Image 1 (cartoon, rainbow, N blue to C red):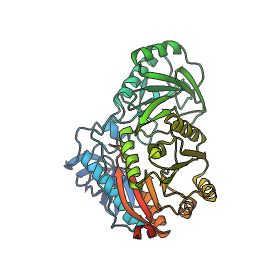
Image 2: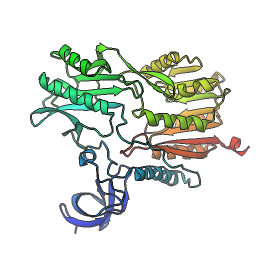
Image 3: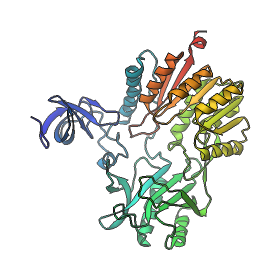
Image 4: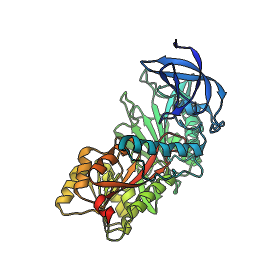
Amino acid sequence: MLNKNAIVEVEIVDLTHEGAGVAKVDGFVFFVDNALPGEVIKMRVLKLKKNIGFGKVEEYVTLSPNRNQDIDATYLRSGIADFGHMNYEEQLKFKRKQVVDNLYKTAGISDVEVAETLGMETPYAYRNKAQVPVRRVKGQLETGFYRKNSHDLIPIEDFLIQDKEIDKLIVFVRDLLRRYDLKPYDEKEQTGLIRHLVVRRGHYSGQMMLVFVTTRPKIFRIDQVIAKITEAFPNVVSIIQNINDKNTNAIFGKEFRTLYGQDTITDSMLGNDYEISAQSFYQVNTEMAEKLYQTAIDFSDLNSDSIVIDAYSGIGTIGLSFAKQVKEVYGVEVIETAVEDAKKNAERNGITNAHYVADSAENAMAKWSKDGIKPDVIIVDPPRKGLTESFIKASVAMQPEKITYVSCNPATMARDIKRYQELGYELKKVQPVDLFPQTHHVEAVSLLVRAETSAK
């Protein structure tokens, strides 16, 4: 009989999509962190539910040849790099398998080519944005990351997947906060001043923005702190304060104040310049975002007569990347500030044929249909929950020749593709792209073509 704290020898037979090892014992399915398929381990039972359990590795009996032995377990414990214990080649294979499995399981598709995952040459130090909590640990102000499923801070200096300049700036600011005795936030007591440090860095421009998230407006001796930061890091062109006095998991409060320099930083992607504010959505891996967007552009097979709808257009990064190659781009995004940014970004890059509206994608498409706009291609880049039924119907009603689907969740992508197939579109090809090396996240681009056009 299995019970809590029992130690059993098990073989890991699979991985969950979040990277936990799967073992089967006595009718239970166990999930075990830091265990790879093919490994035999001695497992301690941590928790039992009806027919599932959670275990931890007490000892490795045999190790997988795909194990990365060099990873510091901190990155696994904190969830920063929940795939870091797997060789990078294996990570790429696993991500492709996720896409293949979801397409088969959800949509019954097994005859469409899913290409090998596009990976990074150097799959580390790629994140251009950091959001780091500031807390007291053992009596000292620390910056780091929470242990998985908790609010216990693990002090970390090298975040493995973050831009190294960002890591250096965070350590420098941490030391200044200690020196000037600025108090870290205490969640339980709801006391202290500094909650988070948020840093953004332009991949190509090198410009940096630092945001102090504080519980109240006044920061003691902030001028001296700023002088020290800008002297040591001349690339810091923007220092912002965000005030968040609520007891919440949201990082930012409503109020932003510029303490030094500019309100934004600029960077470029696929040849266009973008202005990025503290709260702009901008892909955190610029190098791979360019590959992702280029894949979507190539799949769409655009020409100078193409009319394209960019649904979920954000600050315009996808649509503006190809605007100069096509006749018209119509972008829709529900977040109004993002739409304002998209319009500014079009202007900044001398693009006059891109039109952006703040609305739900369904409403915008219905209005465009009434205005007689007939898109050749609709590009969608939805959030993790995928597309709504009403969006799918509205997009099919416009009868585009192609729908190019950029996904950050293979499960909802497969569900939506199934729906499109029922409504007369055929899946032609899929390209997974690794935007988040060392983590379980996988992006993919799929091309759907209207059935009668594909028969021609």
